Image (tube, rainbow, N blue to C red):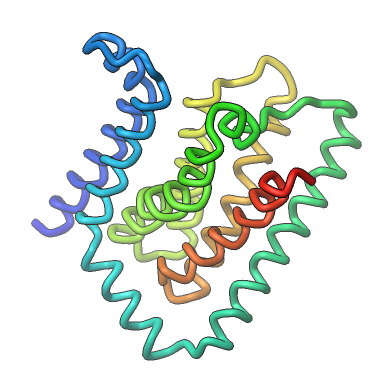
Length: 221
C-alpha cells in the first residue's frame, strides 16, 4: 500500500509539472493574465511550495543526517569536489561538441531567462531548479527505487526526456543534445547516491554549480 501511494504521488507530480510547464501560459491567457512572466512566477512558486510540503519528512530526515554525520569542512570538501568534477565534464563536453559539430549553437536557457527578468532568473536557477527539480527528479524516484544502478538510469533518462519535451527535439545533432542533458545528469545522480542519497547535499552541490555562471552573468563578465 505504501509503495502504491508513493507511485501515485510521483506520477501526480510529474503530470502536474508537465501540465503547467506546457500549458500554464495558455491557461493564463485564457483567464486574463497577459503577462507571461507573472504566470511563470506564480506557477513555479506554487509547484515549489507543494513539492516541498509533500517531501518535508525526507528533507527533515536528510537535514538531521547532515548535522549528525557531516562536519562543515566535510560539506565544503564534498561540494568543491563535485562542482569541480561537473565543470571538468562541461569542458570535456564542450571540446567534444566543437570537434564533432564546430559552431553548433546550443540554446542557453539561462540567457533566455536573463533577458526576460534577472530576478526570475536568480529564482529559477538558485531556488527552483535546486529544490523543486531535485526533489522531483531525484528524491521522488529514490523513494521507490533502492537499486543504485536502476535509480541512476531511471532518473537520468526521465530528466533527459523531460528536457527534450520542454525544449523540443532538434532536427540535427540529436546525439550531442542528448549528451548535454544526459551526461551531467549522471554526475548529479552519482553525487546523490555517493552521499547516502542525501538530497540536501545534492542541493548544495547544484546551488554552487549554478551560482558560478549566474555570478558571471550578474557581474557582466
